[in-house]
Length: 396
Image (cartoon, rainbow, N blue to C red; front, side, top):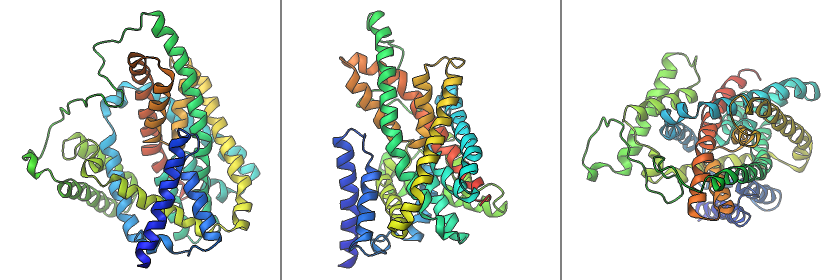
């Protein structure tokens, strides 16, 4: 009975966050609302171990991380990354701008450990926050355990609305040119609007089995095998390259050679389940966030977010013209580091739908903005943030 009660409470908190985010069109992030509910619960009547009671324990999370990192590799289309190399460069250089300001000005204001613990979640999403939290625990730096979680929660409060405003400005600029040219779509460009047909996957298939055998268990078994190979490679090399980075790289390779299909865990029907488990575990770390602890880290969070976003803005503003983009689009690509997929997809889709007067205009806006936003998010959150977190754990 206690297990079901704990699980129900966790999922009700998740639902409340998602509903409020939907009502506000992502201006209020779901993770912020859910985090607030967890904090209020921990400060009042909710037991500190509610997340582990709900079955989201450390063993489950270790499996989640490996599977999800391999899955991220199946989301990355190398051809699209190459085609959108300008967006990739701007997104990564925006992260460099964040690192530059936070590690220079930030360390003049706060101590080194505080900055190092907070920056990886600022340049990435959920996985980097979890890596830093577990790393801090393993090293016994318990005083800073809540900082990566709080940074993960609060930076999206800035990132979502700011990106939405920038994309709306970019949409007005694009629509002006589109309407001036007769509002005609290029028939050679595949449709990308939500609901448009999926493109055919022409990659080679290593395992050409009948459809009846392409079950969810079969997909998950292959993802797990790739994760296991990555872990084994890490052991053989004494983790010279962090095992989490190896999982991502092996996921990309397995996807490209046809061992894993596009969007593997979604096709297996378990992606949301694993993400909810990961989120629940992250929010469970807020049990240590007493009023005194939160009061002590609010200033660090606000200042480091301001420095990080300023670094992204300066890098984007300088690089926009040489890379042939408006500064709004360049800055939006950099800001994907604050949330990544699927928020970058949702925000772009919502803005395109809101700003367009016709389906063709919506399609045009989606074609122009979506590829840049997606590859920017993959480059920062899926690759850069995992690498940065792995490096920064050694610097604490």
